[in-house]
Image 1 (cartoon, rainbow, N blue to C red):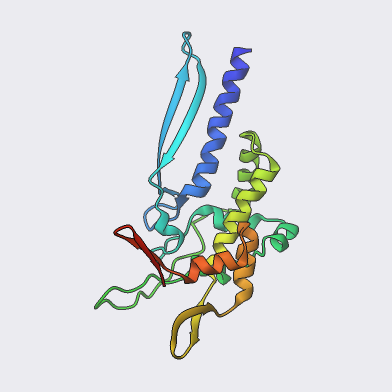
Image 2: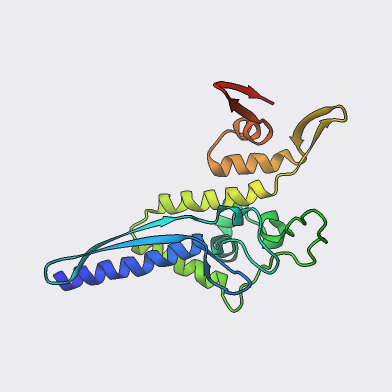
Length: 220
Protein backbone atom coordinates (compact mmCIF):
# COMPACT_ATOMS: atom_id res chain seq x y z
CA UNK A 1 0.00 0.00 0.00
CA UNK A 2 0.95 3.66 -0.30
CA UNK A 3 1.25 3.97 3.47
CA UNK A 4 3.56 0.98 3.82
CA UNK A 5 5.70 2.22 0.92
CA UNK A 6 5.99 5.63 2.58
CA UNK A 7 7.01 4.01 5.84
CA UNK A 8 9.59 1.97 3.95
CA UNK A 9 11.07 5.12 2.41
CA UNK A 10 11.13 6.85 5.79
CA UNK A 11 12.87 3.87 7.37
CA UNK A 12 15.54 3.78 4.67
CA UNK A 13 16.06 7.53 5.03
CA UNK A 14 16.55 7.22 8.79
CA UNK A 15 18.84 4.22 8.46
CA UNK A 16 20.91 5.92 5.74
CA UNK A 17 21.59 8.71 8.21
CA UNK A 18 23.32 6.19 10.50
CA UNK A 19 25.59 5.20 7.63
CA UNK A 20 26.42 8.81 6.74
CA UNK A 21 27.16 9.62 10.38
CA UNK A 22 29.46 6.60 10.75
CA UNK A 23 31.59 7.70 7.81
CA UNK A 24 31.18 11.47 8.13
CA UNK A 25 30.84 12.30 11.82
CA UNK A 26 33.52 12.50 14.48
CA UNK A 27 34.17 13.66 18.01
CA UNK A 28 35.39 17.24 18.27
CA UNK A 29 36.17 19.31 21.36
CA UNK A 30 32.64 20.74 21.25
CA UNK A 31 30.52 17.83 20.07
CA UNK A 32 30.85 14.06 20.44
CA UNK A 33 28.97 13.51 17.18
CA UNK A 34 29.93 16.43 14.97
CA UNK A 35 29.09 16.27 11.28
CA UNK A 36 32.23 16.86 9.23
CA UNK A 37 30.46 17.01 5.86
CA UNK A 38 27.47 18.64 4.21
CA UNK A 39 24.50 16.87 2.73
CA UNK A 40 21.72 17.88 0.37
CA UNK A 41 18.46 16.00 0.94
CA UNK A 42 15.96 15.95 -1.93
CA UNK A 43 12.52 14.65 -0.92
CA UNK A 44 9.85 13.88 -3.49
CA UNK A 45 6.14 14.06 -2.60
CA UNK A 46 3.17 12.95 -4.65
CA UNK A 47 0.00 14.97 -5.31
CA UNK A 48 -1.46 13.84 -2.00
CA UNK A 49 1.50 15.19 -0.09
CA UNK A 50 2.89 11.75 0.69
CA UNK A 51 6.64 11.22 0.38
CA UNK A 52 7.30 8.97 -2.62
CA UNK A 53 11.08 9.15 -2.88
CA UNK A 54 14.23 10.67 -1.50
CA UNK A 55 17.90 11.13 -2.40
CA UNK A 56 20.82 12.31 -0.28
CA UNK A 57 23.93 13.92 -1.77
CA UNK A 58 26.91 14.30 0.61
CA UNK A 59 29.65 16.83 -0.11
CA UNK A 60 32.65 18.68 1.38
CA UNK A 61 33.87 15.83 3.58
CA UNK A 62 36.74 16.93 5.85
CA UNK A 63 39.26 14.54 4.28
CA UNK A 64 42.22 15.77 6.32
CA UNK A 65 40.65 14.31 9.48
CA UNK A 66 41.46 10.81 8.24
CA UNK A 67 45.19 11.42 8.70
CA UNK A 68 45.30 14.07 11.43
CA UNK A 69 43.06 15.24 14.28
CA UNK A 70 43.32 17.99 16.85
CA UNK A 71 44.02 17.18 20.53
CA UNK A 72 41.09 15.47 22.30
CA UNK A 73 39.31 14.83 19.00
CA UNK A 74 38.76 11.59 17.08
CA UNK A 75 38.88 10.28 13.58
CA UNK A 76 35.63 9.25 11.89
CA UNK A 77 33.37 6.97 13.94
CA UNK A 78 33.52 4.07 11.50
CA UNK A 79 37.16 3.25 12.33
CA UNK A 80 36.41 2.80 16.03
CA UNK A 81 33.13 1.01 15.32
CA UNK A 82 34.85 -1.57 13.13
CA UNK A 83 37.62 -2.19 15.67
CA UNK A 84 35.13 -2.52 18.53
CA UNK A 85 32.42 -4.56 16.85
CA UNK A 86 34.04 -6.83 14.25
CA UNK A 87 33.81 -10.56 14.85
CA UNK A 88 36.90 -12.66 15.57
CA UNK A 89 36.85 -13.96 11.99
CA UNK A 90 36.58 -10.45 10.56
CA UNK A 91 39.39 -9.22 12.82
CA UNK A 92 41.69 -11.89 11.39
CA UNK A 93 40.54 -11.40 7.82
CA UNK A 94 40.88 -7.62 7.98
CA UNK A 95 44.11 -7.64 10.03
CA UNK A 96 42.50 -5.51 12.74
CA UNK A 97 44.33 -4.60 15.94
CA UNK A 98 43.56 -2.52 19.01
CA UNK A 99 42.87 1.19 18.41
CA UNK A 100 46.09 2.13 20.21
CA UNK A 101 48.09 0.29 17.53
CA UNK A 102 46.79 2.42 14.65
CA UNK A 103 48.73 5.58 13.86
CA UNK A 104 45.77 7.38 12.30
CA UNK A 105 43.89 7.07 15.60
CA UNK A 106 46.56 8.04 18.14
CA UNK A 107 49.06 10.51 16.67
CA UNK A 108 49.66 13.98 18.03
CA UNK A 109 49.12 16.89 15.62
CA UNK A 110 52.32 18.43 14.31
CA UNK A 111 53.51 21.65 15.92
CA UNK A 112 53.81 24.72 13.74
CA UNK A 113 56.88 26.92 13.46
CA UNK A 114 57.74 28.35 16.87
CA UNK A 115 54.96 26.42 18.57
CA UNK A 116 55.37 24.04 21.48
CA UNK A 117 54.69 20.38 20.79
CA UNK A 118 51.05 19.53 21.61
CA UNK A 119 50.73 17.82 24.99
CA UNK A 120 47.65 15.77 24.17
CA UNK A 121 47.04 13.34 21.36
CA UNK A 122 43.65 12.68 19.83
CA UNK A 123 41.36 10.60 22.03
CA UNK A 124 39.99 7.08 21.53
CA UNK A 125 36.72 7.67 23.37
CA UNK A 126 33.75 9.86 22.50
CA UNK A 127 31.84 10.41 25.71
CA UNK A 128 29.33 7.66 26.39
CA UNK A 129 29.18 6.45 22.79
CA UNK A 130 29.50 2.65 22.66
CA UNK A 131 31.38 1.93 19.42
CA UNK A 132 30.52 -1.77 19.54
CA UNK A 133 26.79 -1.06 19.72
CA UNK A 134 27.12 1.55 17.00
CA UNK A 135 28.80 -1.02 14.76
CA UNK A 136 25.84 -3.37 15.22
CA UNK A 137 23.45 -0.53 14.37
CA UNK A 138 25.54 0.27 11.29
CA UNK A 139 25.25 -3.31 10.04
CA UNK A 140 21.46 -3.18 10.53
CA UNK A 141 21.38 0.08 8.59
CA UNK A 142 23.32 -1.31 5.64
CA UNK A 143 20.87 -4.24 5.46
CA UNK A 144 17.88 -1.89 5.64
CA UNK A 145 19.29 0.23 2.80
CA UNK A 146 19.75 -2.77 0.55
CA UNK A 147 23.54 -3.12 0.57
CA UNK A 148 24.66 -6.62 -0.34
CA UNK A 149 26.98 -8.54 1.96
CA UNK A 150 29.66 -8.34 -0.72
CA UNK A 151 29.34 -4.55 -0.90
CA UNK A 152 29.51 -4.19 2.89
CA UNK A 153 32.50 -6.51 3.07
CA UNK A 154 34.26 -4.46 0.40
CA UNK A 155 33.61 -1.19 2.24
CA UNK A 156 35.04 -2.53 5.48
CA UNK A 157 38.08 -3.86 3.62
CA UNK A 158 38.69 -0.31 2.43
CA UNK A 159 38.33 1.03 5.99
CA UNK A 160 40.79 -1.56 7.29
CA UNK A 161 43.14 -0.83 4.40
CA UNK A 162 43.22 2.86 5.28
CA UNK A 163 44.17 1.97 8.86
CA UNK A 164 47.01 -0.18 7.57
CA UNK A 165 48.26 2.65 5.33
CA UNK A 166 48.54 4.85 8.38
CA UNK A 167 50.94 2.35 9.96
CA UNK A 168 53.37 2.38 7.02
CA UNK A 169 56.69 3.97 7.98
CA UNK A 170 59.65 4.60 5.71
CA UNK A 171 63.43 4.72 5.91
CA UNK A 172 66.15 5.71 3.41
CA UNK A 173 67.15 2.97 1.02
CA UNK A 174 70.80 3.79 1.82
CA UNK A 175 72.75 6.59 3.61
CA UNK A 176 73.58 8.19 0.27
CA UNK A 177 70.26 7.59 -1.49
CA UNK A 178 67.21 9.89 -1.20
CA UNK A 179 64.81 7.12 -2.13
CA UNK A 180 62.73 5.41 0.56
CA UNK A 181 61.58 1.93 1.43
CA UNK A 182 59.11 0.69 4.05
CA UNK A 183 60.51 -0.25 7.45
CA UNK A 184 57.99 -3.10 7.67
CA UNK A 185 57.15 -4.40 4.18
CA UNK A 186 54.52 -6.70 5.67
CA UNK A 187 52.27 -3.74 6.46
CA UNK A 188 52.34 -2.62 2.83
CA UNK A 189 51.45 -6.16 1.77
CA UNK A 190 48.45 -6.21 4.15
CA UNK A 191 47.25 -2.80 2.94
CA UNK A 192 47.57 -3.83 -0.72
CA UNK A 193 45.58 -7.02 -0.14
CA UNK A 194 42.80 -5.15 1.68
CA UNK A 195 42.63 -2.43 -0.98
CA UNK A 196 42.65 -4.93 -3.82
CA UNK A 197 45.80 -3.66 -5.52
CA UNK A 198 49.25 -5.11 -6.12
CA UNK A 199 51.90 -4.62 -3.47
CA UNK A 200 54.33 -3.31 -6.09
CA UNK A 201 51.82 -0.81 -7.43
CA UNK A 202 50.95 0.49 -3.97
CA UNK A 203 54.60 0.82 -3.01
CA UNK A 204 55.28 2.74 -6.23
CA UNK A 205 52.48 5.20 -5.46
CA UNK A 206 53.72 5.69 -1.89
CA UNK A 207 57.39 6.22 -2.75
CA UNK A 208 57.40 7.82 -6.22
CA UNK A 209 56.57 11.43 -7.01
CA UNK A 210 55.08 12.27 -10.38
CA UNK A 211 55.22 15.93 -11.47
CA UNK A 212 53.50 17.38 -14.52
CA UNK A 213 54.13 20.93 -15.74
CA UNK A 214 53.95 22.63 -19.11
CA UNK A 215 52.83 19.47 -20.82
CA UNK A 216 55.85 17.54 -19.54
CA UNK A 217 56.03 15.04 -16.72
CA UNK A 218 58.83 13.71 -14.57
CA UNK A 219 59.22 11.02 -11.95
CA UNK A 220 61.33 11.22 -8.81
